Image (spheres, rainbow, N blue to C red):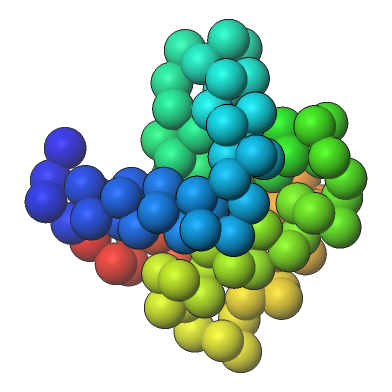
Length: 104
């Protein structure tokens, strides 16, 4: 894992802790239970699974909001955030992964 990826993972982790600590605990627990990895790693490696996990635990609105907060924390192009989240909602994780990959 490169230094850039470690920074991305820590930023995701810290951002979720700040805005939704209770949800963060549930997401990590369920992520380890079902996918054998931390939620922050799930967001980077399998953003669609991460999005769906939030929907299962909470709601679609919460999933959209949390991913929007994550995208902003990672300094994604603000004009593309809504389309990236809409893609996740429609089952396409490629735009989110492309934004993550462009950061490294």
